Amino acid sequence: MGPGSDMYRQQILDHYKNPRNYGEIEDATFSHVGENPMCGDEIRIDVKLEDDGETIAGVAFRGDGCAISQAAASMFSQEVRGKTLDELAEMDRDDMVEMLGVDISPMRIKCAVLAEKVAQDGADIYRGELDLEKTTTEDDE
Image (cartoon, rainbow, N blue to C red; front, side, top):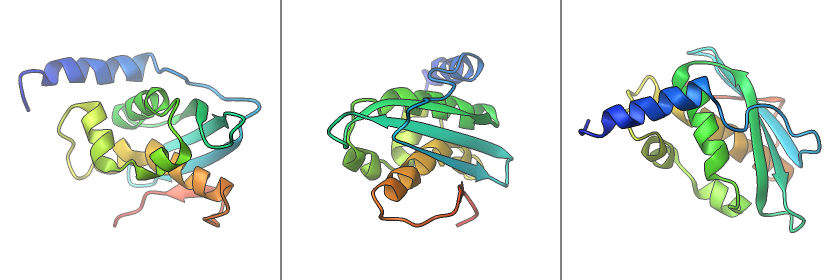
């Protein structure tokens, strides 16, 4: 970790203690729930799309979990506003780790990417590209 890692740790703690976009969107275009059974994290993501049906107008999340999963969900909710569903689909774990700004251990990667994966699966279900039950589960790969 570089000299700026303390700044990123503080940012993670700030997002954990003061999450942005925590709550729900009453008229969400789609919502999806996901969990990480290894850690006990659970997140529900609500997404509201613009009238074009492709651009993300707003994201809200709620759930419970470790500092990494909750801070990542908070940061993610800010990061994806204005992106299209295609841009959301292109995001990967490296994007989430870069956003967090700290080295993430292999055991914590699933915590860091949970919000992204839940939103991506929710978008795929919305588009009819994925048929899932109610919950996305981040199991061991």
